[in-house]
Image (cartoon, rainbow, N blue to C red; front, side, top):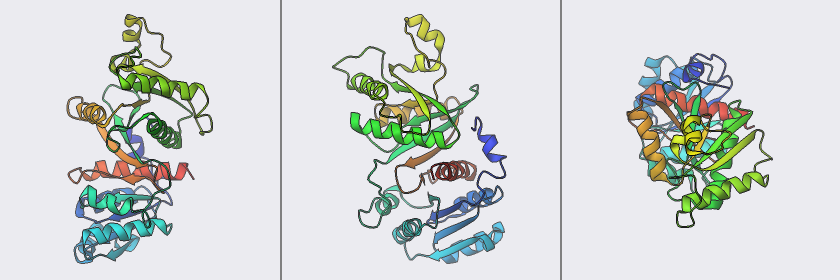
Length: 304
């Protein structure tokens, strides 16, 4: 079980035998591939403009470990990358220098994409200064306003992925503005519904155990002291691994606040497809892209 990103960075064998497909390869994404190969990544398939890619991989010293597939356009690069994954050539798919909507169009194609019948959802993995463990948040980047059934799938995706990182038990908190169920506040109703699903054993088939509580305000998530002050009995207050947010706005603000004001490091993945998808920002540095890629490969290996 990884508690720090540095443990991943320093783990020479965590990527052993893994293969990555990179759609619309660019210099910074290729640098992330180079960092991964230093830590055991097997091979990588790079799609895109071969005339641009070849000199970059030569300079990086990895030309003998990558396969370059030329694509005439960015949309073609995404489609080719998706087909490589469908053919079993990659344990993870990574987005390069391509617009997210164009990339996802290939991923979500009903006939030739990576759909599995499961709901796709985003999982943010963060290292927060002062905390002694990684923190996970879902869904902060994919589903806009999920209903209860969708939240059950989002929670299942996250629990399965986190267990693949070596977690045997996961504490999950369903976030709302307060801890009282209010029929006029849908987030509290859904949180109670998720707890009921957990109590009824809907997640018992997963390879990990879990404790699900909610509705829970973020101060109680952060501190047992606040729970006691509010008179709330909680087994997981101050020890939460996973926060499940009610909608994309809440998740986006939560994660970006931690990154920009608390100086947290963040990696992000899309779950529920044939393989984990590294959906990073084009402005993210290579180290951040490497972390997301490494986590995707570890999770992919742990779920096989």
